[in-house]
Length: 167
Image (cartoon, rainbow, N blue to C red; front, side):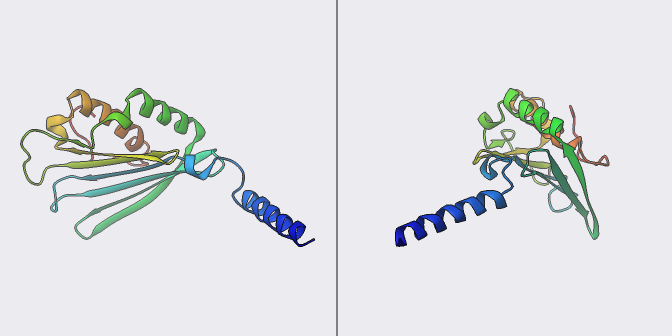
């Protein structure tokens, strides 16, 4: 009799946990994207963008913040399932997960624009840093990076200063 109680309790706990998660998309497979741009080292503008897929896979929420000196701007937007599919295709087509962790020129100068892009899906994350986009953005790796970058940045509800040659 005791064993039945233990099994029943365990089964009920698993069932409750499954219901609480809302079914939908496996939490480990949901898309997460983080992007940031620093336009001129400590003297420039900072942009931070985050995308989180909804647990049911119906879309995602994009949040962003920007600061320059004492000025700050925050906002959000809702992205549909179509954007999720298109973004996933762009990541695959551009072979984002195969890009090196750092894309930069041979010589690195101080206080140039610095971009970071992290894409996570199915418990796998890849972070790429592109330094000096005007110099390395036209390289094959830079163009692949920017194809994925633009798929995120073009969703901002307002246009920003985070544009470089070729974007």
